[in-house]
Image (cartoon, rainbow, N blue to C red; front, side):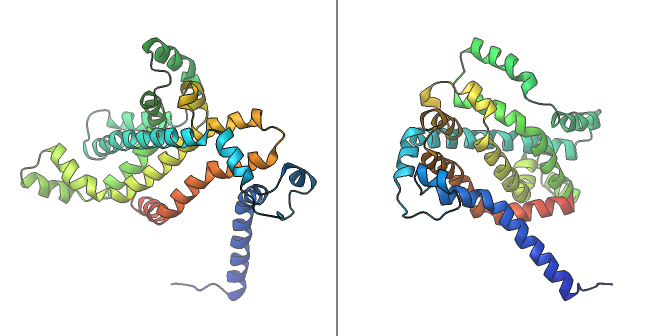
Length: 277
């Protein structure tokens, strides 16, 4: 039997949600507010409104953080990482969900355990191997590490989608003469689209914000990413809080726009996966 919430409960719930949204948006609001103010005004009162909306801070931040180079490298790194992760995670998810091979449960547990292993354990061995191979600074090689970090959770999310797809779909494709690879590419993969979009958003955002791996393997000024560019500003503009605030806004603005554009798919994908998985 369905019960409707009382007006008081709905009001309290709305007040709580509004308060949670305001708390979540407060840091971004402060950054946006101070990005238009000079250093002296920020130090005097960080909560005051800017007297003008000059873009000088953004110009200094863009040039000082070398964001014109960083945004290209970050897009390449995040895009390549997302594609590699989706390719391997979707194949692994299909196999783990459909093929009950001996030891498949151990493989599933292995991927579950992999989500708890800190990457710091492998940092030095990986750098040693990459240095020997001469691929330190190669964004494709760095993307392989980022993809490996994101693979376990991506496999689990996509496996839930494959499990939710009826086996009759596979049987129908088999009766039409499709082999397992053809069934995966032409039947299962299109049905996994909500999960693929959800995983793509998560992996892209993780890769864009990643710092430890990129600071270790993206050597050289020509390989700088957005996060590394912002780090370099902290030394150059340590006494210019206005430029630092503008740099932080430039750093997060693309991923906010990216998430807002795809948030409808993200929410529907997460909800669908939670129900069906």
